[in-house]
Image 1 (cartoon, rainbow, N blue to C red):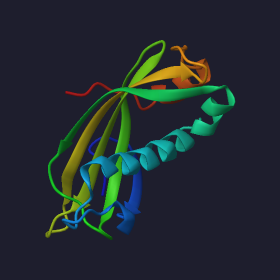
Image 2 (image 1 turned 60 degrees about the horizontal axis):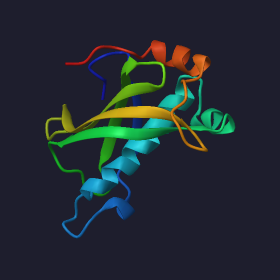
Image 3 (image 1 turned 90 degrees about the horizontal axis):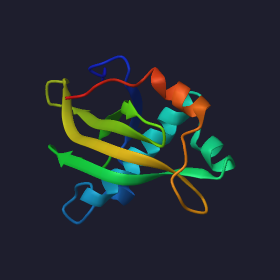
Image 4 (image 1 turned 180 degrees about the vertical axis):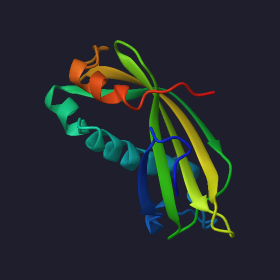
Amino acid sequence: MKPENPRFHTCSLRVPLYEIDLGQGVYHGNYYHLFEIAREAFFREIGFPYKSLMEMQLHLTVAEALCKYKESLHYDEQIDIHTSVSWVRDRSLGVVQRVYKKDKAGNPLLCTDLSLNLVCVRFGGGAFPLPTEFAGCLERYTQPFS
């Protein structure tokens, strides 16, 4: 499935059994596991794996999350998670992630839409400026969203 904008990174995977609830769909909180897998793949792809932040004694903490669930996901479905950046500031960034699966006709179907505000924080606490190299890697994927 192609993203609607070439500045989206795509992570393809199958929904694992351990994310499914008693209703046989992905439990709403478990979507964040899938988003995390895709964000890690995105950071690796842009040339700044999350491990690099950790080696600097930094991490990205979620300050705000808005998740819109449109279509349910089920065990073993093939999904694509598209990740991009909506803005970058001195100590924070906005991330947009969208989960797609194919509908019965084989067309991409938007299932979940997530907007995150992430803040760079030192291991010991306190906001800290994003590393310059990291911010530079994010630039190629930064785009305005409506």
